[in-house]
Length: 457
Image 1 (cartoon, helix red, strand yellow):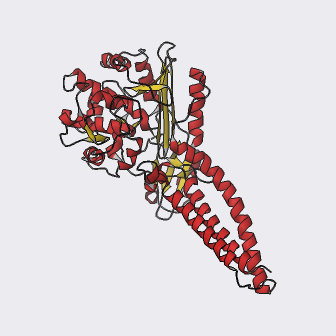
Image 2 (tube, rainbow, N blue to C red):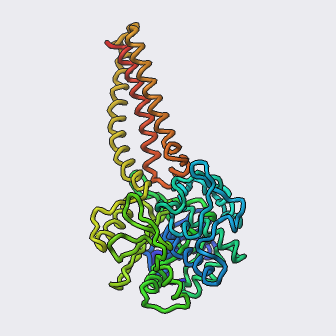
């Protein structure tokens, strides 16, 4: 442990804390020094350094793809082999017809599995978590026939992780450490979660005004897709390997990962194709991958011809981290109109704007309602028996308000199988605030209408 700062030394002195040295425990993390006593805890933040660990989120997929290539190289797999050859009970459907999905299609995100299957991920740290993910997806209705078009679905790589475990006989985490991270000399990189890792940055969510510390649930069944952890030093090393600047025992597999072979189809909307954990554009030699977890963000990109690469890692997942990613892509590719594909970034951006205007409206209408009630108690306004037209207006307004609430509350389900639990996990804290303000605005508005009609003057 490095020496604590001057303030830390002062806190440890008897003059500051009138107890014995054994009363105080100094805990160093990657972002702070924390002093623990029987009565209080005091934190001193410290800056991120090259050893600070972050979750790589979906940037994890390029490592999982390399793990699959390692098994292919050893003869344990065939690219066009179907999932059913490993898990005979696994099946998917498209328009009522049963399909098998190949390893190649999983690697290319051309399986046809809907992106909404992210809702199938369950909180778990059990050894069988990957198998549970597979069981939750089995029987799903595909959006497209396998192999037709690129549609990103994070669970594709969780299925690959389950195949790695099945073929190797090792846990995904142990396999990656032994066969991928160690040969590549990525000594601080690991898969999965380590409770209380002192070198890992604490994750945050965007709040209404300030970032809020947020500890995400453990999704071991999503480790191959999103939960490989690393730092700036290892990611610099990894990018140099990708660009051929550092030689490793796995160079022949790195080369294979760059060769598209049977070129996967482009995305219907974004003009990009996906292969082996990397996104390829139509015109640029620049390949990249963004990644987002509930409280982390990462982005890797490189141009092998120009020998330029970069990594962006943040312990916050917000619209601003997405904006930085878009800016970097535009600088490297010249595509200034590059679209952000993450739905929760849209939630983050627009839920904040909606919350702002709803708060203004709620304040205004609440003030009017309070004024009405005050006038009633003062005798300024008197009850007037409502007419049939008034009753009809109130009924229609209530029905419309109820329909609007139902429309909003069923939105995740209507997107194809999401749940509010999944949406709230990935969206910023601004979204729940926007929903609460929305419901309150409807309630207060309807109350104001009733008072206005029944107590006109």
